[in-house]
Length: 483
Image (cartoon, rainbow, N blue to C red; front, side):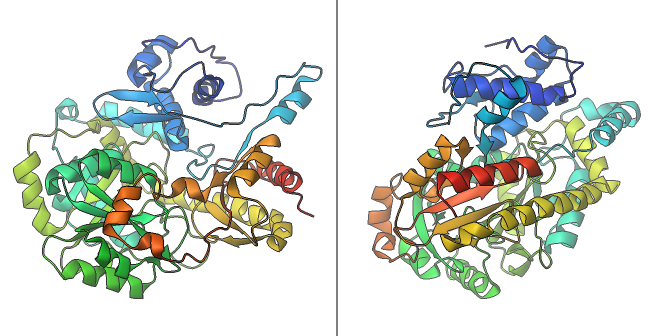
């Protein structure tokens, strides 16, 4: 597909990227764009619509973050398999505004972020400066790891905010965490046993499995991944999200961090992949230091991204390799070119170096805290029926039913009837996807889980306005008969 006939209204108050995003999202939801369909490249669509390429980048980035499309390195963007999305009933328009409000879908997605406050003018100004002032070498291929000064700026940022100890030589810049995980598989080799938290960040599990690794789901307790089950899994690599486990919101305390580091130290060739996906957003206390900051034996591979903290379209992630792994990278992947445009790298460098990133983060923390506090206030009547957890950090909360009156799927369906899209915790479990792996490698299916049998729902709020949060919660009250 080379073109999309998107009727842009350039004199509208809505940003052009929002119009592109909404059009593609609605086409996917209606089934007009089936799963697997390839989208035009950002460059081709921008030329066709006569808009800036960054406008299409922002639209695609938001669709990526919400799971409507996926990006396959070197191939392009494709429509994801989307099932069970609520479709508002067709209505006869009497009062257009009233009918729109009645049919609105309140999407409590845990993957979306708010890009309404993105500093477009600042980004546009830096972009112009880069084209005017940068040396013509910026159009050359550049270092496969990423431009040195961007890697240096990332080192400074990580040391100050996360306690990460590294040099620019250890940093690899890539177009998204998916790409970096696939790159890591090339460095480590495949056919490894990789322990993944259960419930899990599903994309990571799929990447490990598709690359030839053997995925070992490991159950959690109140402190994160259970190290006793990690040992029984026979895994050589552990993938964890210790600063805020996705999707449960569990924060791994220092004692458990020491345990998992000790596990890695027990044998040569064991490593921990730390995915620090949204550590910037805490609303109580200070950010928790990274697992990598505690590592003294070179066992932690650190992953971070700007997609959550800046915008999904900023397809820039970074990987910090242990010192002893850098030589292995040079030997195996010296010929692989960077997947991030040097122009984008230069813009991001200036955004970091000139202090815009820090100011933007402070602004977003304040914005998200306001939404977070409003959501918790509106959820007060729910506490009679649900335990609320995962608050004070991140961009979603967890509702665990008290008792077994309704299942997750029943609660999900009732929410859909009211136009609300909530997310089931069971959809993030690896039990069915890797049932054979579990039975062969761990005793996790025999472990009694404290919430087993209880309905657990995920409510994200980042991309919703305060009005949408209030109205969405009111719809959920009606759906679940909350008094």
